[in-house]
Image 1 (tube, rainbow, N blue to C red):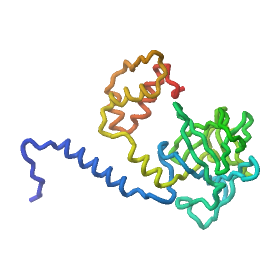
Image 2 (image 1 turned 180 degrees about the vertical axis):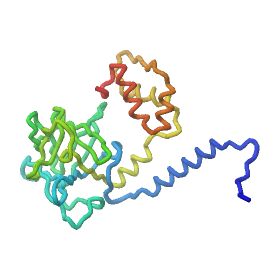
Image 3 (image 1 turned 45 degrees about the horizontal axis):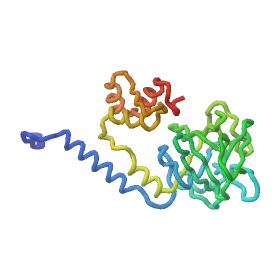
Image 4 (image 1 turned 60 degrees about the horizontal axis):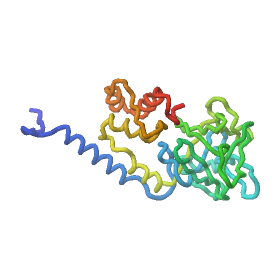
Length: 256
């Protein structure tokens, strides 16, 4: 006879499942390494020191900033070192990522206190000590890595000579990069993520308060059916659905 788990009247099986899920998430957070370098797989991971690598060269290369000039170049890494465990060998390979206030864009400061930027012709340099629009980058996450889009709506790439340029209209193999961050920063970012048990409708209100630019403190919500949010939450694409709903309100600074 097949044994089945005993159940009792009044047992809340849903709450038990939620507790079990929260426990699994906590255990996963506790197993995250606190030192070394790890791969970036979420926008919240891009904070503090980072490395930018490309597999479009053979062997793979890492982005370097010169200590004596504004030159930016991808230089080959040791082929014997797996990309998944690569760590910087010089400070010139390390950039400090910082999110801009009230924006989805980031800036990247080199170890020599100069910002990574691009002009309208796609020339990438690290020369300015003060940050401006040319030093702003939009991160586009993909399944195979990420792409960096300049303020001129062109994508960063590594050309055949290892030069860094930002003149690509579309994202291809040369425009996809692997980014690595410090494990301690990623662990802290994981712990700050939104609780998955939060109500989808409440989450939409929080997002609109954060991202909308209506004047006078007005709060304008989408009039579409909120059941779409609950469905998106179950399917794992809630953030994309929230972005789509906000973009239709035509006042969102980050949906255009």
